[in-house]
Image 1 (cartoon, rainbow, N blue to C red):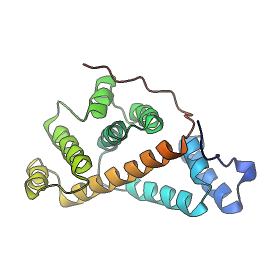
Image 2 (tube, rainbow, N blue to C red):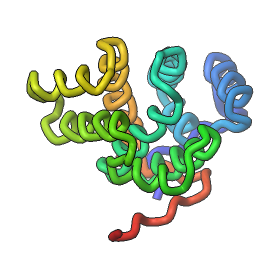
Image 3 (cartoon, helix red, strand yellow):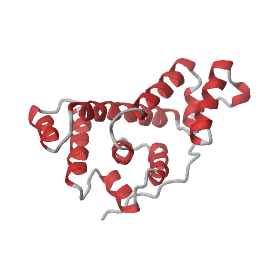
Image 4 (cartoon, rainbow, N blue to C red):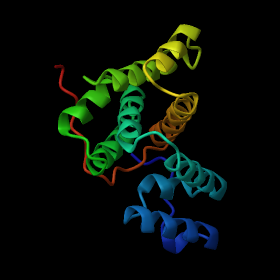
Length: 181
């Protein structure tokens, strides 16, 4: 149940309408999460700006989606799981890569190392060890990439918590539950 109303375009102020137009130009729609965040123009503007900056980073889109899937699954955000399952398809991920991302694993050693690192960030609330950061470097990740992974975990966690609290209505194809396998 949606606990905080979504702000439709006809109810939005000029600043929010402009933000909606940019999102629609990019995604072809304005997701309910954005409409719900629009209760605070400052929050929706910050969210969209952060997303835009993250899109300009060096991490491959496929890895960003796998991380987003894992974080969303870990945080129990069905809305974000559905969003990232849909976006993963446009990023070129196969069904098994989407499933593996949700589980925090990959047959690719470098990707698997990143996902395990993400899991440790979530488990320790960021208090990872020096050895865990060193393992990322040894796997071939640069300091820039590690920094972006940390930022992405925080960004997706914000989305997850926001949607879990507000009960955002899902406007993406509902993701199936993960099987026990």
